Image (cartoon, rainbow, N blue to C red; front, top):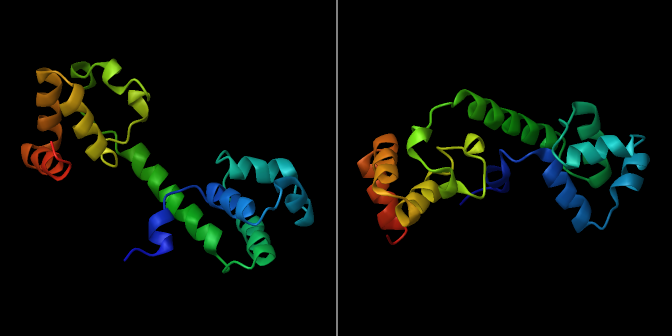
Length: 153
C-alpha cells in the first residue's frame, strides 16, 4: 500500500499547501499575515512559482499542526523530479511525430518516461504507421505490447 508521501512526492509543496488551506477554509492572505509573511510570497509558493524555504515551512507546519519537515521533504522530492526531468533529454525522434497528435500539450514539455502509458495509447489510437514504428523503436516492442495489453488495445 502506498503511503501518502509516496503518492504526492514530486508534486510542488505549494500545491499541497494550497489544498490544505482550502480544506481548512483558510484564506492565503490572512494566513500569510498571521505568519508574519507577505501574502505575495505565500501566493507564489501555492502557485508553484517559488520554492518553499525552511523558515517558512517551519512556520506553516507549526501553525497547521503538521509534522516538522513535511514541506521541506516535499520540496526536496520536487527538486529531484525537476532535476531528473531536465537531465532526461532522451525522447523519440520528434520529426517522426506529428504535433497534432499531442494537440493538448507542447511536445517539448512531455515527460516521455513518466507519461509513457498515455503516449503509447495515444499514438496507437491516433497515430500513423511511421509514428507507431518510432514509438516501438523508442520504448521497445515488449514495453509497447505490455502497455497495450494492460490497457485493452
